[in-house]
Length: 155
Image (cartoon, rainbow, N blue to C red; front, side):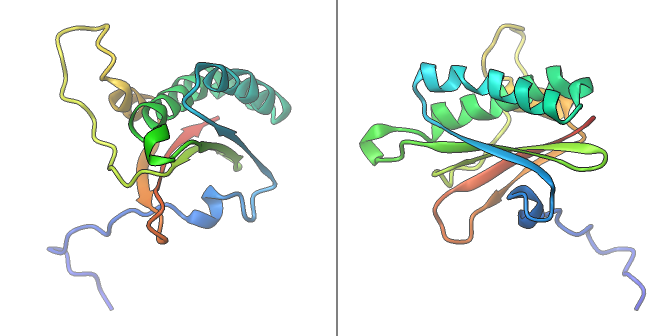
């Protein structure tokens, strides 16, 4: 049946099987907390992973994107009073892309901050993710326990 040309485009949804590494031979994940020592372990983890996958062409962008996504999770989703203490950073490599996902316990949607005149403003993280990735987005978890924010980077 032909598609109605006036219909809006379909909503892009991340394949959760791919996000969780199912069917992807190169997949790894690391749990982290909002503690600075925990966040500091993510960069060496990403470097080791991309080096072992021979995907160093996207190392700098992946470090930046993963750092922004993890920082957002630490700042907006991980708080001890609500007993939401950890999130997951996952990386999966396909033939052409590295998929970077951060799954956290908050259902608060990621919203890019409006542009600012101050280049050192720390609220530009999702705009940076948008600039460096081929595509990015989020998926609310069906069990209402949080969300996954993802970015796809070409390697």
